[in-house]
Amino acid sequence: MSKKKKKYYTVWKGKRTGIFETWNDCKAQIKDYEGAQYKSFETFDAAKKALNGSYFDFIGKNNKFSSSLSSDQLKKIGQPNYHSISVDAASSGNPGIMEYRGVDTKSKKQLFIQGPFEQGTNNIGEFLALVHGLAFLKQNNSDRLLYTDSRTAMSWIKKKTCNTKLKRNDKNKALFELVERAVNWLKTNTYSTIIVKWETKAWGEIPADFGRK
Image 1 (cartoon, rainbow, N blue to C red):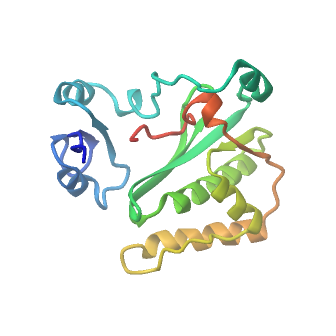
Image 2: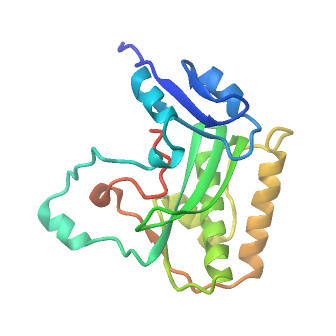
């Protein structure tokens, strides 16, 4: 059985900032802290260098990507439509601390972010991110596309429901209230936004990715 590789966690914004050597220590700094900023690194030096920089210089970075698809497959898929926004979620555990955000697909400029929520799942985050994206584009009277890498979230949007198996409790009460608002928005609003599946195998991680894989 292979030994799990050690990680170092940089916290730019939290109850305490700095570099932490275990996930539990990192989690203690970001739990219940609105707008927490953190990321894992493979070495202490990388984490230290990151701490001296900006959180936004590191999230969503995917410089090592190389597509495994053939040139014919890539040609058939084509390139992303940059007249769009992209959404994604990140969950540390399932359930675990979860957050989601939306960015401009081309510039990766952050347009909105929610969380971290104490107890959520990636699917719930992806669903909420899509609804938030739909509301954001409608409010701004925008004709941009909306990218997601979650087929599950797309199906929930189509059905106008959040079909999660997560049970409601005191820890995730605020999250479920947000889910209820999202479902209600879907049932009481119309929209013309086209939701498109992000082709990860061809293009790499979606621009809204938190880069914590």
